[in-house]
Length: 186
Image 1 (cartoon, rainbow, N blue to C red):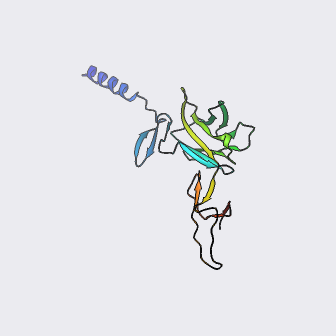
Image 2: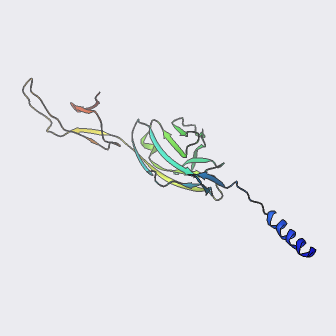
Image 3: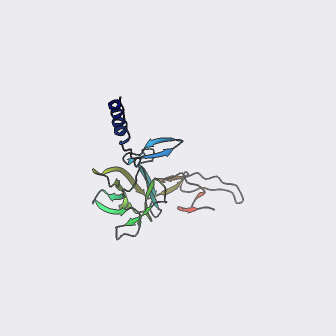
């Protein structure tokens, strides 16, 4: 009988020597979910258009980043623009924007110039690295009045002009066209 008790104790001891590490899990929504490796949230737009002289923004969302770093690279010359929130470019127009606790890493180019058009890469310092490409197009906006070069109206009459903004990155709001030049209205 004594031998049976000893066998039982040895088996029990072996069962409780199992170690469980909880470093790779997080509590979310009342349950346990594995963290795993960083990955890109592909719901963000990967193409952006900005007008010359206005700020341009490229938004990269990285989930499960943990202690990894996010970098922005200009593809045409492989120039490292930012690592984390630090800028590694002598061109002060480039900056990384990031709020603590956020998954979003934004590259801001302000003011945008035509030479800024091209492909930019959001990289995560995993091994091997992961990256996602973004295309920035910088355009010169032009406005045109849809009527002949001359328009005759009686003094004091109402006039309705249709103005078309070509190559505008966003639909214009409060835009006015007048006498061959483009003005912003209030």
